[in-house]
Image (cartoon, rainbow, N blue to C red; front, side):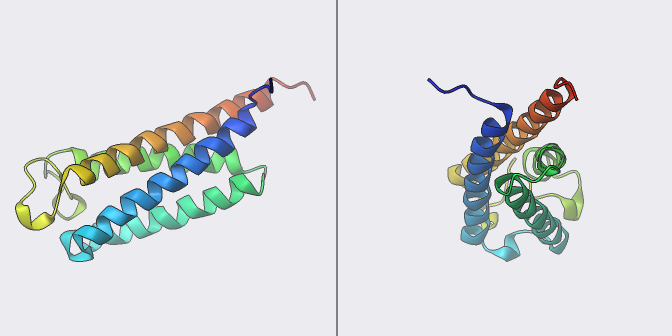
Amino acid sequence: MTETTPESTLRATTAVFAVALLVHGADHLRRGMDATSALVNALGTLQLLFALFTVFLVFRRHPAAPRAAVFIGFASAVGFTIVHLLPDWFGPLSDSFINAPPASGVTGFSWFAALFEITADLAIGIAGLWVLRSRESIPA
């Protein structure tokens, strides 16, 4: 039986995170890029770039990977919650699934994709914290 290490957990969680990115992105492509505001599209693109960079760092086993995972994980979870799960309170920063108009193309798959993404965001953030804490407890 092999022991699960914080680093191996971070890599496994990052793989799931990458799948969640693809699923959420596929939903946005299915719905059409005009279903969201230019601001949501721009922020989503920026998040995707940071997320892909984090995936790269984790699989290269870069020392900064856990910090990147914490940052992108928790920032993305907050961002996607605000954009998709809260009512349309934020104007151009909102793509609310609550009472979404039919033209927005929101379906059960959209809900699944958003919730999967948010869960994966939290998981990679927590895994990054676990690695950082494990490094602090190792004597120099």
